[in-house]
Length: 145
View (cartoon, rainbow, N blue to C red):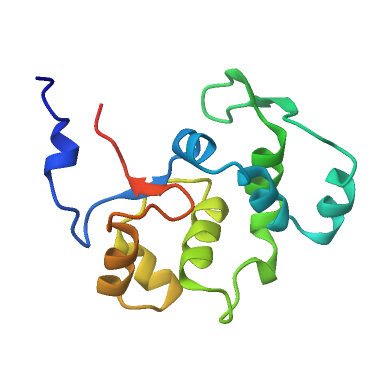
């Protein structure tokens, strides 16, 4: 019998780091690209209107200067659209606000406590939302490798 991963045995807390697991999202949500497109700013919604499928772009890591092929849509969202002032508003639902916050910070891991500070929402509610059996928008605890 295979041994379960240690991370699956631990119950997340308000200090557990989370982030978007794009691989999980791609495997479990057929409309993930439609969802990403809905987050684009007006300028980029128009630009991506006639582009179908996955387009990769070369991205240079500013710290290592390593060139990597990345999904163009994700890159545009993270590097431009997520920086726009109206990307997250008070009317944005919790799961959408969490997702957009991860996009706006380059998908760097954040704990429910850190998310709560930025979104001005209770960390316990955030924890209950993203640590339950249902995975929202690919937001999962950071896996320890």
